[in-house]
Length: 411
Image (cartoon, rainbow, N blue to C red; front, side, top):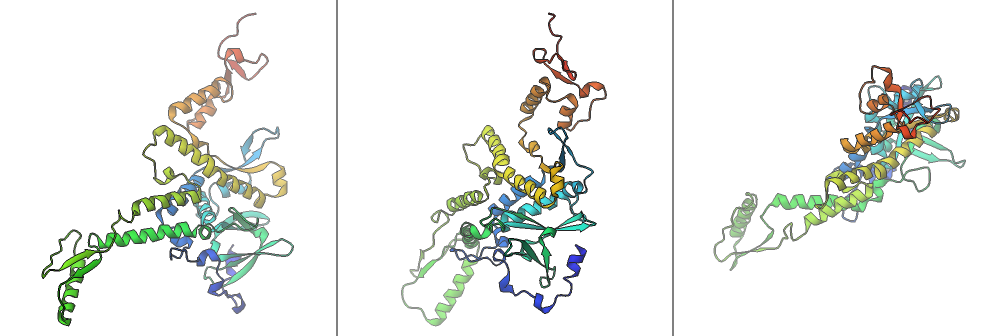
């Protein structure tokens, strides 16, 4: 990576890229609401930021390990000896943590549709994984269907063409199969309306209870009187909300501005939150918007549905991308694969979890040490921790590793 940026330090004139050639998701077209929508302005919408955070943090907090299938074909163990294990599990680059790495990747894919990581290899082995900003990478598809990546340097001017084998390209939902669709551009109307509503509501509260309208006075006004009255109104309009208006000489104030209730701002803004949640496939309860009829039991099911229907597709997308882009064909054939562990997020209440583990324990699925490990406890000091037990009526007669919970009846 040092070599990549070093070559960008002194760009030539032919490497310069004009501003109008920036990717569309950076420039961002205007929405019908008149608001320019980019991923920067989109993140200023609380609902968008909340959806992006709840998905990115959910993926990042799930333990991610490179695994290797056991020779028997069932089960797998962490591939701690593989050089890629610690890059994906703890420290991809420099002092960047794996949490920060995965969080940023998901943010890039959710908003820009694509995430790019430079693969720095030393002696043919992956030495570090360095995130690139989506706006500084231009992808070109050639006639032979191969891809090349033009990366702009930190100064935003110098460029270098990087071969596909040195770029890990993670795609979101795609139309053409080689570039993810720009989510912010596709949803610019919904996001733009949310921005316009916030601006409108903010302006309404800025003016407080001092509505716009007409100050009507009987009879003509001289120029000095008009100027004096105008100055007085400006001063009055800047006073605190709720200050009474005093009129004389038959003057009348005719309000011509709607209140927040009249404009149904609250209802519209609530609907836009739901619309943004639909965009990112996030349940409203995950961003703090819950129905009045929701109960604890229904909320728990919504949290589980969030893991299954929102987070699981994202981690599956990343897992398969790692296997295709970072593992060789030989390593895949040897049984290496990436696994995010979402089980911790799918735990129910403590009592239900213990009852489920007890069923597995009594049927010989897990032993005591495995149960204790799931609860972040140390193994037992005696040999009983590794033994499997089953109920007496389910014991296998020739099972050498199964210890019945009761003595079978004599024949």
